[in-house]
Image (cartoon, rainbow, N blue to C red; front, top):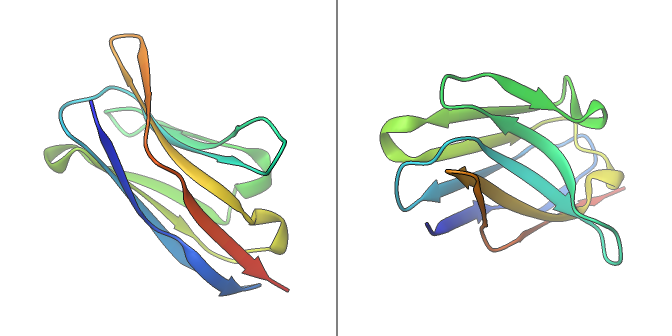
Length: 111
């Protein structure tokens, strides 16, 4: 399975950005993680095939993950962005217990 992520970029604090990630085939749970340099990758949000979601406390109420199963794509809408949201964001997918990662996409939030 290959994951192709897009989106990200530079935004001012309080602004919004969207990320998308498309899988090359059917997958199970998909999600977004983020990583600062020298820090372990951390969960941002995950979504099951039926739309059950889970968010990190730090993004609840600001970020929304959604899914288009027909196109094997997930989205992350990020609102009210904060400088501490700055990180490389990675798409993730579970396929039969195996975990796949997409390439990272940088999100930079300026103060």
